[in-house]
Image 1: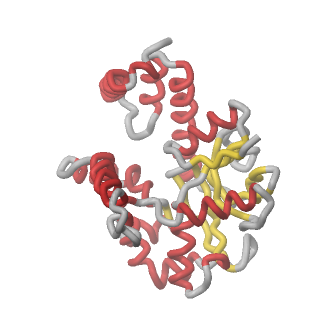
Image 2: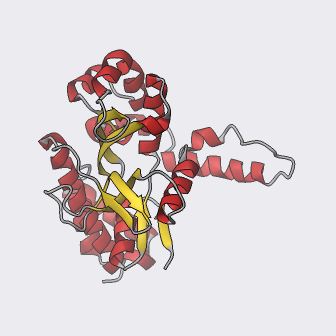
Image 3: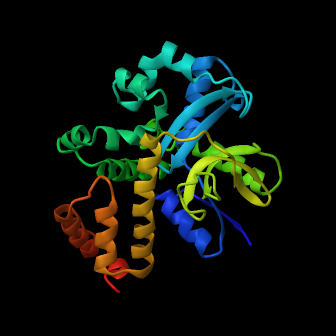
Amino acid sequence: DAWIIDFTNPVGIVTRALLQAGHKAVGLCNVAIGFQRKFAALLDVTPGEVHLDHVGLNHLTWELGVRLGGPDGENMLPKLLAEHGDTIADDLHMPRAIVDRLGVVPSYYLRYFYAHDEVVRELRTKPSRAAEVAAMEKELLALYGDPALDEKPALLARRGGAFYSEAAVDLASSLLGSGGSAVQVVNTYNKGILPFLPDDAVIEVQARVDGTGATPLPVPELDPLHAGLISHVTAYEDLALEAALRGGRDRVFKALLAHPLIGQFEYAEALTDKLIAHNREHLAWA
């Protein structure tokens, strides 16, 4: 009867698998809490005063509004973009002009979609992020093995995942009915919030959290620019979960072919072979 707070990537897919299997699960990512703190600092208010119109899937989200005082508060996003657009764009590694044209703040993961050729060129000049993280963790574990260490290693800041501890404690407190913020950004069932997705799709939005779980809150109507990509990636996530649960080369291939960053059978075939070669015990059976 325990609650499972899921940090494991891909959060949306894993959370959906847990929920479909009957577990009491809520997914959690640190993107929203990071934006909340950055915007609060720029507005010179406390993080608790900032409410985000945060909409999408895990690692595929947009801040459609930044409101002071709650869901019905004044939208400060136009002011933030006008006065701090350069800072925001730099953090996203996107051109200021593009952020202004979008009129919203995309997650920094959207750069993989909006500038994928540029990202690929960059990745070909250095180790993958996974290799970088593995090297950092090896070094961090060696540091933590020193009994004399009595402060947080500076290297940890480069690892990513800032504010996860605060978000996790806040969410756990709410789920256990012992305090915590009443409204938090989580990954949970859609339940009709995004009408173009199935009710049992897992989305990442503001939700009211209490001892009964997370209830997603209504969101502004989405522009087709956002809704189309969300629908496309949700189709991939459906197929990826099916491949993970049931295995089989064809299921793996179809999931990869459905992903908007792949979408060509030549790439999907090659990636299928590599995935099965490295994960045969999980994916090769039919």
